[in-house]
Amino acid sequence: MVLANTPSPPPQILSKPNNLFNQHTHLLCCLNQCRDMLQLKQIHAQALRSTLPNHPDTLFLYSRILHFSAINDLHYAYRVFNGIHNPNSFMWNTLIRSCAQSSDSKEQAFLLYKRMLEQATVLPDKHTFPFVLKACAYLFALYEGKQAHAQMFKLGFQSDVYVNNSLIHFYASCGCLESAQNVFDKMPGKSVVSWNAMIDALVQFGEFEIALKQFVQLQNYFDPDEYTIQSVLNACAGLCALSLGMWAHAYLLRKFDDNVAMDVLVNNCLVDMYCKCGALDIALQVFERMDRRDLTSWNSMILGFAMHGKAELALEYFDLMVRTWKFIPNSISFVAVLSACNHRCMVNEGRKYFEMMVSKYEIEPQLEHYGCLVDILARAGLIDEALDLVSSMPMKPDAVIWRSILDSCCKKNASVELSEEMARQVIESKGGDCSAVYVLLSRVYASASRWNEVGLLRKLMTDRGVTKEPGCSLIEIDGVTHEFFAGDTSHPRTKDIYQFLDVIEERLESVGCTPDYSQAPMVDDLNDGKQKNLRVHSERLAIALGLLSLKPGMPIRIFKNLQVCSDCHKVTKLISKIFHVEIIMRDRVRFHHFKDGFCSCMDYW
Image 1 (cartoon, rainbow, N blue to C red):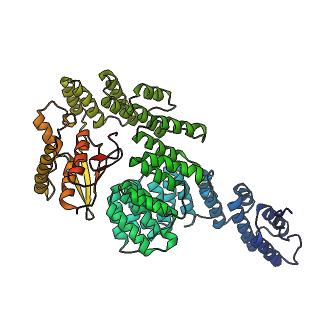
Image 2 (cartoon, helix red, strand yellow; image 1 turned 180 degrees about the vertical axis):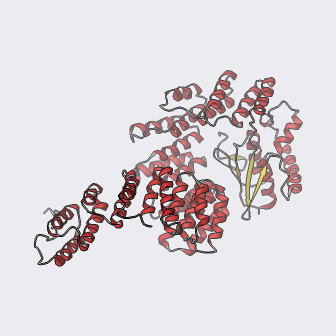
Image 3 (spheres, one colour; image 1 turned 90 degrees about the horizontal axis):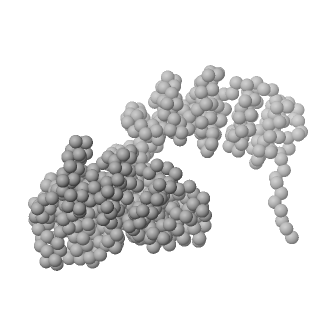
């Protein structure tokens, strides 16, 4: 026996009550039972036949019809709206809100607002502006949003907390952090949403320390909610502040119920934070304990495996996501997978997943995908194939792609002429005239013993005002972050640190470690001077402080702004073995886990 679903019968609207009041009541009752647009259209037709257009109860009835249709059929809602004589502000706001929340009609939200002003039958109210600003924020329509801001000020809503919250979000979305901060600072009254909007804006702009200071101030007025914690976790990820991130995690578990603690968005932030702070094992625990996961959850975990050099696990979880959990990967998924292949020189796998992305999932490759594949090929020594791929790209390669090929030319001892051509491409690219390209090219010249060119390159840097980006390393000890630059002598424990560097140097010499002078300054200095320069690289100062300060058995976590040099990489492996310590170092490219004299990157970075 086959059971079929039968549609619910339409509400009984054909019988006509005796008077107008009963007719309005009857139609409102039918609206309360309305389940689909077919029923609504019947109710609308009956209202057109049996009610007076300008009666107050009729306007209320049409506002309910408009509200239902705006949620279910925006085109029909426009027809309803255009048939209403002198719509009130609620009706305008209903349609503006639906346009602002739609995926393809956000432009209509501002056009409706403009039409509302032009007709001048009713004025915008405090409910109008949040909807208009939301659409402007999504469209990055700065000029239009500023017009709405001026009108809001003219109508006296500058003190309204809800309107100001929308302004903060709008300006932040349009890249105007200073304007967002100005709105926030001038608010006479703030809600927790106001604080959250400002903290989130600061995080979006990479102002992580200021965001955390705002978080501290917030607690003087309100208890943080789950949205606050998400922003704090993102700030901790940006700062690599593991201790504060763990505190936020503990606060979450202590202060909120299971619905919040197990929320997928909150847990996605936790996974991302732990991955970026070097605690991959905790990130995996959070991921495995999630009751529900979305595509972002999987992407964050796969990307975490990739940046920590766990390429096999990254590919395994991608396969698990697709085959077992039936998620359809998106553009970010393939960035993660290609990054994993890149960190382990998986050339064939990289080609396979790039082809899978295009042919099976019909995802158009973006610059990031091409950049990953170019880097995979170039770092494997397939520089000609990498250049062929660059020439076939549908978009113009950026400085990052050219710089990755130049880096591979340097490491693979390519010809000086090819390296010079790659350097020229980097410099001519937008944003490419930075110190990194000069440093790479100088190493090419130094390897060829062309010291005149090295000197000319340094003069060119001086003439163009390009300064070498200083190496900087961070280490967190007991919740306090310590920052070191190369050759730094500003730390309160500088004397202890440099004395311990001597101890480290003696232990390294005892096991036959010799410096790699190619990583020293760009000039042909004496080897003794080069060795002194190498031993005070920022990560070595941070490691020395970690060995002096942390308890035995605790890992040393270093976060570095530049790619670790080959000499420091070799030395750090030996330190991990000599001093029986695990050192987790994140450089500009990836994480390195040093333990027992080995690195997780297997000397490929």
